[in-house]
Length: 153
Image 1 (cartoon, rainbow, N blue to C red):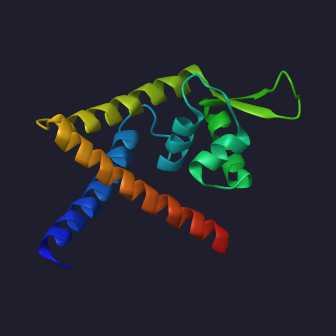
Image 2 (cartoon, helix red, strand yellow):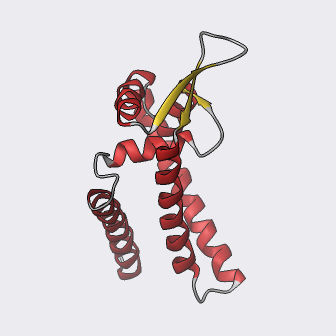
């Protein structure tokens, strides 16, 4: 790999690992220390005010409905998530956040907002556009890999 690609690869690996470490240690040292990273990401996928079906949230997280159900059961017990029945179809389960879940959601979003603002600090509009293009390319690559992985199961 050429030096520039090595540098980019190093940053990507380090950024991923550091974000995971920061999120894990922040959770462990907070009032939300009863949660795992995966549970926190499930809360993020459920969203602040929009209520989503179990299937919609599972699709966002690229997990099966069964896998999500296990996580949701734990989140309901811990007081972060509520299950509601759809008013139009009582067979459909809608997921929503409790007050405690919304508080965690807001704090987690604040972390991501700081992360984005720090990332673009000192960049002009053209540089930000280049960054967005690169991140879009990375997103597409990862999304295709997830789909290929799901098809291979």
